[in-house]
Image (cartoon, rainbow, N blue to C red):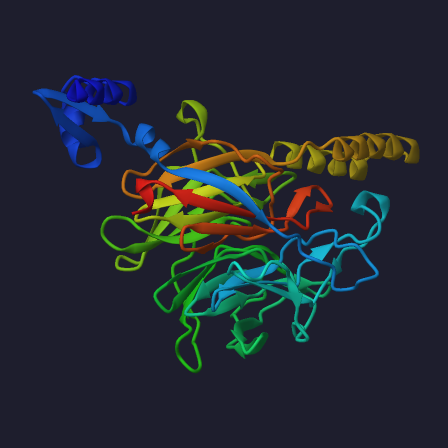
Length: 416
């Protein structure tokens, strides 16, 4: 009876397949269960459901100025050093929304929260960032946080910061400047080597790709083969592909015309071959490609990547179309009418795509998990420690930030 129940359970989870040439070719990347003379195949897309996410939250990021309310920060520098979650800098609109004439403000404050059961409140350091700063690419490794580029009111920056936590304070030092001033790039590490891909420079979107060994006293940035296309606001991670750790660039956007182009592509860089390849797409229902930019993501387990929503571009492009129409309008009355429709469009924005996607770097397949139970946070970072992923602050609608810090607690055999 016990074996019968087990078989019934497997029958619910798996599908019978006829043997075919395609099955034989792909047998190494499918799970084959042989039970009592019956052969069943569970496709990789069906097996990803074994990974589970339990969502929790940490206390909100406080305001550095007790006289003001923390509205949240987009583009914060974020990472983990010595088991301490650090969130610094970032930007918001403290007074009015941008279409109401509000000005973006960049910050130099640094917050930290020890990740243990005894500490339940954020603390503000006496240390400040060298300049107000946001939208850097951040990588946590060896109890340090490497922050590359970023921007402030002066435009994109080329500085590289190293943040450490020591004796109750965040210590800041500088590394060799990045070769170009850039914001909204992506970064990931393989061992002590930090790779930085794409971004937005002073002259537009970048396809550049560099690396540096940050364990050296004076890291040298080495130019590598360019990305297949210029891209910013992509998720960039390192993950095992069955042969080696590779750099993956998922989604993102660029603009070379009236409207931005959003990508669904998954690009892989092989350090041994020194080449880029498009190996797949971010896929949703019916395995259809989904464009996504400015979201967050992280490598999990031995060969998976998770993506926590993002901007699919549809409403972003509609906003751009309104802006273009206002610029092309010939009379003040026409401009005012179009601008009024643009404002209504922005004020009714529902927020960003809440879908959670998985990507398997062995099979190059993608699919959906249960969606986010809260507003998607874009233009921020996903910071992983063990089986927990921290997503601090970010933008939840155009011009609107959140002070919340959401935490994904992962479980399942995909994490082994």
